[in-house]
Length: 141
Image (cartoon, rainbow, N blue to C red; front, side, top):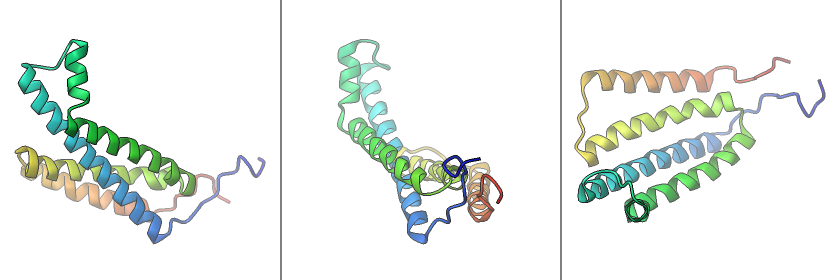
């Protein structure tokens, strides 16, 4: 195997881990804006728009547009993350967005949190910690 195809382990710095977490938090916040905007527009239109003017109204409603912009920013930041750390290290952090969504949906969208969701949050946190501390090398030396 040539050195260009040999994937070796890159250790993530504390700064990179913080960057990953912040970007994942932003992705979750973007989803909350999108959901809020979709709720407002679909309520005012009597359902999801099936015509072009209604769809344009939905996409350009400020919370939806802001959420999409945040998500675009997250996507471009994700490229930097993937360039610097192995996918098997970075990808589990995306599970943090589930926590952001559950808590944000409760706080801002009036959704409920039950015991099973709290257990799921604890398991997600434990899983992300375990995966981030495990050996992330994709090919052993």
